[in-house]
Image 1: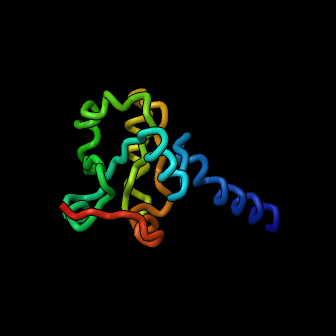
Image 2: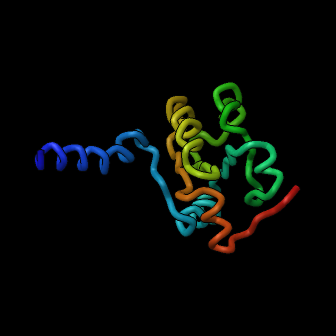
Image 3: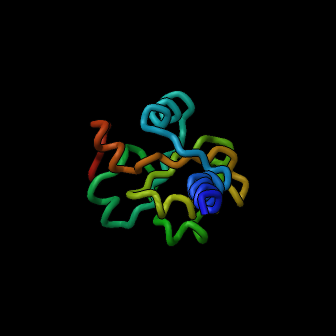
Length: 127
């Protein structure tokens, strides 16, 4: 019983690494560096109302449920870093995987999403 519990616990700990399929999560410090020094695209995949309530300056808004039909709009950013912004983490993985599948080489999820960005007192705009 102890061995089974240990194996199951180990698998549960490894699941987030396996489920991300190569999508790296970054913190706000790394995101700011990518934005400021590597001209990263900030891709906000939240709903329209969430985006309107406040988003990162110069971010591109493509709701998660529309990424499969609209990823071609991002073609010119294929070789640049893309920082995917979400609210709670669940929605960012799908858009990130779609981008990776279509040849985007540098896709990063902001760990903790927009909430982490706000807690760090980083800039938010409403327009």
